[in-house]
Image (cartoon, rainbow, N blue to C red):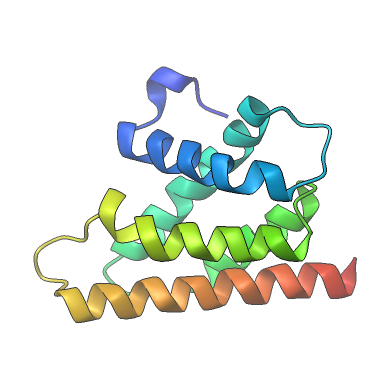
Length: 126
């Protein structure tokens, strides 16, 4: 995990919002700060997936899988994650100009679908 000073502000802010939403839905031994640390690289991966030239949502499956492996496998954890992605992904990681609003929203939705698929896959394979 990179040090806090190495994390772009938007990634850290998104991870903090995500952890605030997820923490009450996650029966875990992790503190909220530890949960934020777990989510920070995942937030960066979501940002990178959203902005890639050749969009491919499949890497977001690993984020859903990582949530289950990181002790956030409760159904409410998935609901909270998808809610945060829907409300904040494009706000904190606005796409470059060539990606219009409809394209960015479609990418965001596809990333949410991939996170959900990875989450369910991890529960099934548990």
